[in-house]
Amino acid sequence: MTNVTGAKLASIGGNDFKVVFDADSTVGLLPQAIIVNPAARTVKIVSVLPSDNVGSFYASLKLNTPAGSDTASTQLIANGYIPVYQYCTVLSTTAETL
Image 1 (tube, rainbow, N blue to C red):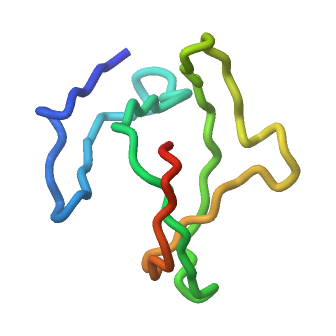
Image 2 (cartoon, one colour):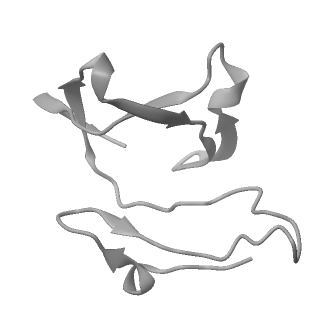
C-alpha cells in the first residue's frame, strides 16, 4: 500500500491535483482501490451538458461520523457509476458539508 499526503500531490492548477503511481500488471496485481481523504467542502448545485461527459467511476467509501464509522459503495445502487464531466456551471452553494 502507498500513502500519498498533500505534500506529495502535484498541482495541475487551481484546486486540482494529481498523483502518479506505477500500476504495472506484469509485476503484480493492479490497485484494487484508491482511498482519498479530502477536506470537508460545502455542497454545490451544478448544471452540466451531456456533451461534456468524459466517463464515470464508482465510489467505495469509509464514512466517519461522530456516531461511528461505516462503509458504502455506489456499486450497491442501480447504475452506481458516477458520471464525470469536464465542465459544469455552479448554480448555488448549500450550507451542507461533505
